[in-house]
Amino acid sequence: MTEIRDPVHGYVKLEGLALELADTPQMQRLRWIKQLGLASLVYPGANHTRFEHSLGAHHLASLLAEHLGLEEEDKTMVCAAALLHDVGHGPLSHATEAALAPYLRTEHENIVDLLRKGELKDVLDAHGLHAPDIQAFIHGAGLGQIVSGEIDVDRMDYLIRDAHYTGVAYGVIDRLRLLQKITLHQGKLVVEAGGIQAATSLLISRLLMHPSVYYHHVCRISECMIAAAIRRMVDDGASAASVKGMDDIQLFTALDHEGGYAAEMADRIRTRKLFKRAVYVDLESLDPSLARVSDTILAQEIAAEAGVDANYILVDNPLLPDTAEGSFPALIGEEVRPLREVSPLVSILERAHRSTWRFGIYAPPQLRETVAQAAKRCLNLKKNTVQYTFSDIDSGCIL
Image (cartoon, rainbow, N blue to C red; front, side):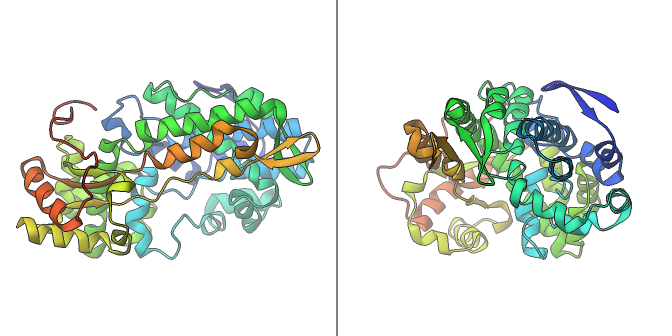
């Protein structure tokens, strides 16, 4: 057994299978992938990695499996899935997924392919474990809901960890209380009545962290820039699968070697010479028909209207926030009900979560006003809506 000092959970213990898995090159690669991608451009302390998060998820899974009294075989599967759940992430974590998705067979990482080769396969084979079973747990099948569900150890760890490293005081979750009050009822995870407040605290944390960290406008801008650079590199002949297998350092090296537009975007990010917000509006400000128009076509239309190069207009139309946590079952007496029905605050939080969504058009600082006026005409933005103004504190500050 080995003990690793973790700044969030204290000492994290690894032994047997977990220790062997953690020592594989596939897992060690996660040491060089930032958990929050490019968020360090906003919060300089946000340099923690997917490796740290994987250890934390494994630690919480171990505690929950012990509390639930799982059979040893089930506990092994749950803990292995928690440790391996991010092994398929590309460089800069989620920042590169949208860029690579059109070029790859699956939108998200196909972990089973990684588990069937190299040292990971050898370790799993030695312990009699099968890659498809591990992947099923990672995707939430059966007891895998501990790893991937409405309220799971993945969310518990990353919210606490991300708040710790960014210094944003919104990731306060009573995780020990929550772990104690989660139980199995007819084969499904439920939270007992005494854990509803702790479960609600997780949802509050996620709601507050979303606009403050995960969808902070500087994070969105930099992610759009790196995505544009990657798409250019792949369109020019680079293998999307090879890019997916890189770590953060290898990605920036590859972009530099690519030259041209890709290298320019990488250098802008490295030196923090970022694009700025030309348009930044909420869901109510947009014509619903825009959802059927591709980002590329929108960028080309705005570029033509503004008389600028379409490569320097980035459209950011993110997915609507996921509010699945409100469906997490709560056990009240002998009745199981969705969390949103037993906690009025949860239903309010779900509605509030949608209000944090923003549609953005980004451009270099010198083109911002021109692009903003052109975008306003092309997008037919609704009147009497609050839009981004150039007086916002943005141009020279960390935020």
